[in-house]
Amino acid sequence: VEKIPQPVIKRICMIYQLLNEMLGSGHTTVSSSELGTRLGIGSHNVRKDISCLDGVKSGGAGYDIVNLKNAIAEKFGFAEQKAACVVGLGRIGTAFLQHAHNVKSEFRVVAGFDSNTNRIETIKTTISVYPAYQISEIAQRLTILIAILTVPDSAAQDAANRLIEGGVKGIINFTDTNLVIRRDDVFVKNMDVTGEMRMLSALIRMDKNN
Amino acid sequence: VEKIPQPVIKRICMIYQLLNEMLGSGHTTVSSSELGTRLGIGSHNVRKDISCLDGVKSGGAGYDIVNLKNAIAEKFGFAEQKAACVVGLGRIGTAFLQHAHNVKSEFRVVAGFDSNTNRIETIKTTISVYPAYQISEIAQRLTILIAILTVPDSAAQDAANRLIEGGVKGIINFTDTNLVIRRDDVFVKNMDVTGEMRMLSALIRMDKNN
Image 1: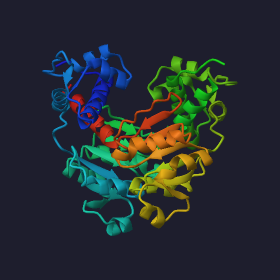
Image 2: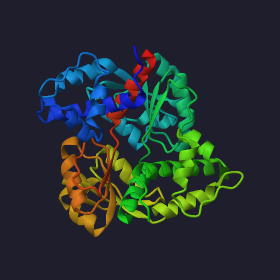
Image 3: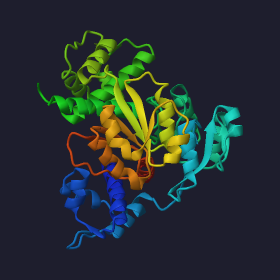
Image 4: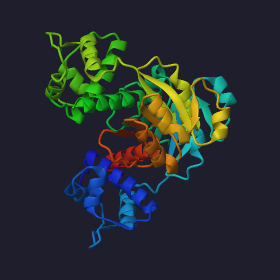
């Protein structure tokens, strides 16, 4: 099997998201040029990306949205539910914990962690919560694949190390810490809100100056 | 003045973030190759990016971190405090509202909005909160530049329209809705956690298969 480059995987995930929205608004087919326009990439690249998938054909009206969506889900294993956890149960972490059981989604939050034992004892949630020192042990036992990291910045690296030790392969990092990851089979997505606001403000300012 | 391309602006913002961290851990100088390695880009590109800034010189030991950081802040106007707001005061929105006055940062959250008037009346916060129909009016009056959008998906486009009408130029979008923005002076950053988890899971799976 040929290796799909990471940028292609990311673009196909964006296509998947877009297809979901189009289905929601009643569309049934879509052309590569429409996908390209909405994603800001050329239709040629869209077709090349989609050619990585198995059994997808483009008819006269373009791609059948349900077929294309299913082909992506099949390729990337989206149908299998994955275990996730939340590390750091402050306001944002707790929000994700409470959210978890509303969503009948591909991700099931199976555990929460916090270093504050008092918080562990008093938090109101139906999800099991554990002290932070148990992260590796519990992550391994529950085969947690992905973690949402919402600890204070100073605790981020230590929590990430414990998660990786426990077999976690993906981290959604809500802290402002740039995690140092020494393994190439672990993926991190930084969700640094202050940094993103700063980037927006730079784009806005430079746009005004032009 | 020459126009700085958006990807360059984004990379310089990433450099800024990295310099902050390096200062925090006691560094005083940094080379372009070290910056490049830590950001996953070539040192040539780092030097080219930095050449967009005014008055930055590289000595034998590389760049002086404080100087470089100040030059970026100057160029992009980071020193000026900007007004921000939170639209949608559920758990995550409320978390940002509460966070706001802890942070003596470049962004000051000056307003919160929610369509639920009962919530507006009962929420505990020192930030002023308003009903959603006042978004445009208040955004204009308080010259709000950036909004954090945490409403339910179905309300996202309407809230974005009101924000833009009120002069907001940047939106941090926490909803799963792909906002349709018909103006090129408005910038959106999507913070779709489910989508990011899905993307991580795809990267993890394809990594395993290779």
